[in-house]
Image (cartoon, rainbow, N blue to C red; front, side, top):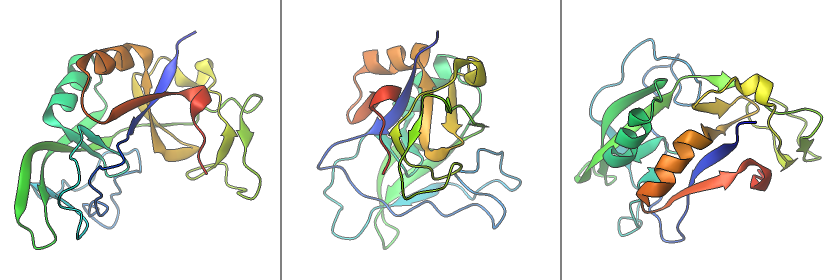
Length: 187
């Protein structure tokens, strides 16, 4: 059985961002679909006010932002469902603070939760897009060996195959975390 991990970011001192502006009214960063209209480049990832001194990580979830180094690793291991766009990190006034990042649109939502082994949190009846889990288990028949995808049950979760996870982990990039699926709890 293939193991999967959730790609996450984490550092108590990390920079916090506003959500990226959607490229058009029909195109959403978390939709799992190709954009019908390409975004205007470079994409500005705007740091929240009074947070300019926060740490810039190789991966910022849920902003859809990764360093060029992480993007190169992911593409290099064979992930081919990732549209990457030049991005800059800017302050609220639009001043560019850092380059060397990509905004990403991950193509593909997969309904991969094993409904027999997944325990959804009570109080949230949603089972698609924003479901909450007490315990999450994936069905390997539903993942079909995909290297990287968004979990359709909770689109904020970016899931990577163990093959991708091993290469990311070996790179030891600052702030990148790989969570075992069994350890994922979304409130």
